[in-house]
Image (cartoon, rainbow, N blue to C red; front, top):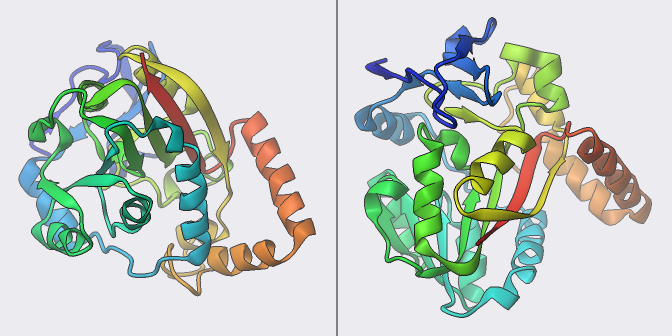
Length: 291
């Protein structure tokens, strides 16, 4: 690593401690705010090389995921004023495609040329680079979406301040990110394959994510944890090398079974209720409103 954090990137405390068992990802924990982060800071070149060669975008778009995206956007229809939506870290542009069909003007960001070109072919207005280096117009967006993105950021305060600047007053940001307090992370510890450098650099809990946004111009609308992945359990323990997102993954097969049976949907709802109560779900899903 060429650079490293000398203090907590969330609260700037110098009271941090390296986490035993997570040395491969350079993880440290802040003694003041409990934020978990990679002490190593990858260079822009390192990130571009990683995402160009190691990070494979999926071509599989589950119809169940499409349904979930529709449900998410249903909840933001009332925000449409400018109709401008920013999809940070657009990836395969699946979410953005649905938003475009629903009448949003979708802007996106990515780090590699190939990903940008593929997204532009789907009708997105794309920009290359880190969000804080692009400088969108102030108060421009009704909605900013960051699906599995903020965990890739070395400086989350700078990142959130840029979201706040580009959102109009009353606009919303929708965030999903892995939950460091999840049942699987507690069970698997450093073996959990969500943890790795330079892919993931910031590891949030509901408390640290809420603190980050509340201190930078936002109020919490909702925050919950949900899900537990059989696929992640198998891949983390070497029992499978299946792609996490694929038509034949254990998770996708189970999702289809659940969608077809009302009683399985009810059971899933109960399990997610329990996971959320104890903040043990794999994923954090949160909405914050700009004050």
